[in-house]
Image 1 (cartoon, helix red, strand yellow):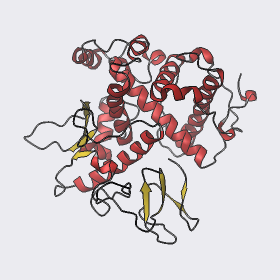
Image 2: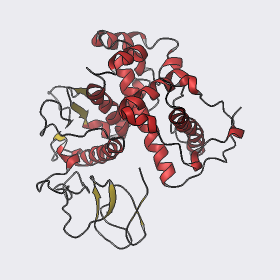
Image 3: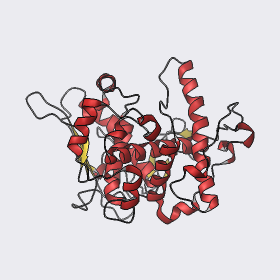
Image 4: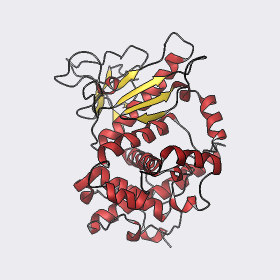
Length: 359
């Protein structure tokens, strides 16, 4: 998330409806990708005062009604039932953050109502007694989220039972969007054969792969080759997990850079990842820039994890990057950006790892 300020100079946050200082009405412009006081004549999303509490604006030419983010929501739970209004607010807030990140990498966001074949839709559904169990997942452009995932206690029980180090609403959304964008970016296109080389053949029986994973667990060496144990279950899950972590990495580093935090003086020695970890040899500047972000991430997450431990909290990022994982992250980066990957910007000076910090 980026740092935003009101016209009065006070900081405003991405979910804000009003400036805390001057009380100006705040809105997010999804075309300009800017958050600020609404200009005269600006039109707010119809869900601004609904349970979703949406602060997005309508783009010029859009009919009055719902904004781009809200139009991707196809199904919501019964808001008269206990906790569902609060759950929907948490889910919609997380979705707006994730779609903001998707916009940053120039991936298409087309609601399914406007493109029935390939558009994106979110179904936020509740498992009801006597009814079918709602499973979080993706199918043909529709992302289903069990609204109970918005409950901390439910999420923590599932995290522990599935032996997961991390489970958040934001993580679910990024993972399931990874499945959606695999269809958009990889399937049937020039990236497919390279995907099979680095992630495996997605034609392997998916149901059997998941049953094997939950029965036997991941392979013994999974930590060397995958970002998570679940990523080892099937090539589709490897891609979705890697895509989600790419978005975690990119979003967090952009936040740190936007707030001008400087990590260059961190007293940490590390062996930086080199060009051998790239999916392919990019033009030298692009490869160095990508690795610069990766190495900055390693420094930052070490500090964040230590800070979390100082508060008695779980690690902020309980995962480890390996050369094989960095190669897959670079593949995701290149697949998302296409020709633009050759122009990857270097990290800002405040995030660059000085040579003196490396062994």
